[in-house]
Image (cartoon, rainbow, N blue to C red; front, side, top):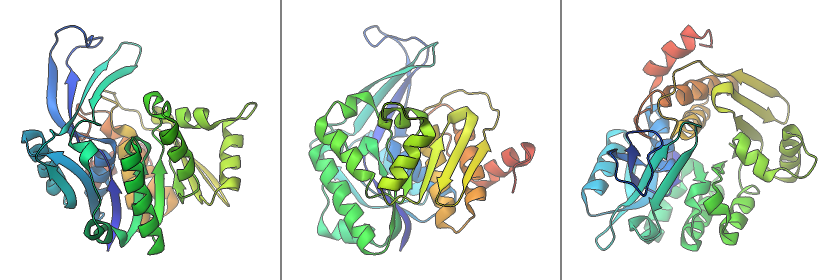
Length: 317
C-alpha cells in the first residue's frame, strides 16, 4: 500500500533570468527544471518519508528522462508513468514581474501530458493508497478529469482518503467542464487545501473568508480545511478546532511550487500519523524553504532541512 498517490502533469520548466522579461522579446531562460504541480507535491511528500506513487505521461526525450530521474531519485514509484513516442514532454515557461505577478506559457494539451491514459493495471496499482491527492491544475481536459475521477473512486472504495488543492487558475476555470470538475471535487475530498485566492473564487456575495469555509464544510464531507496564506502562514479548520500557525521569515527567491511543497509536507505528515499541529508546522516550514530556491522542485526538502528552521523560529513542537 502507498501512503500517497497522485496524478497529473509532468513538465520541463524554464524560468526567465531577468524580471519583467517579455515573451515576445528574446531573452535568457534558466532550465530545464522538472516541474508540474502534482509532481512538486509528490517530491515533497516523498522527501518527508512517505511512500508515494505517481501516474502521468512524458515523452521519449531528454526532458522526460530528467523528470523520471528526479521522481525515481526521490523514491517515488513511477510504474504508472507512461512514455509517449509521438508527443514531446510538456513544457512551461515563466517570467516574474516587479509587482510579484507571474506569467506562464504552457504546452500541455498537445504534449505527452495530454496522452495520459489509465489502464486497469495502473488503476489497480494506485488504488490501494491511504491518500489520493488531486490538483486543480490536473483537471485540465475531459480526459484528465476522467482519469482523476476513476482514481478518486478506486481509492475511496479501498478506504483511502482524498486531499484536494484547487490551485485555481483563470485560464482553467474559463472552461465550464474544468470549473464543474473543481466544484465537484469539493464533494469528494476529505482534506481541502485552498489559498486565499481560491477562497475568493468560491466566496458568495457578502461572505467573509471564514463564512465561506464554514459553508463549504457544512455542505460537503471535508473534515479538514487548511487555508494556505503564504508568508502569513496557515489556518486550519476542523469540526472541533481552529488553529493558526504563523509563517516563517525567509528571503523569497522563487515562489513557484511553495504551495505544492506545503501540501506535500502536510499530507505526508498526516499520513505518517503526526498530530495536526506538528503537520501544520512542518508544512509551513516546507513552504518557506521552497521559496528560497530557484526552480519549482529545487526547494523540496526533508526533515533535516526543516527542523532547523522550526527550531530557530521556536516552532519545533
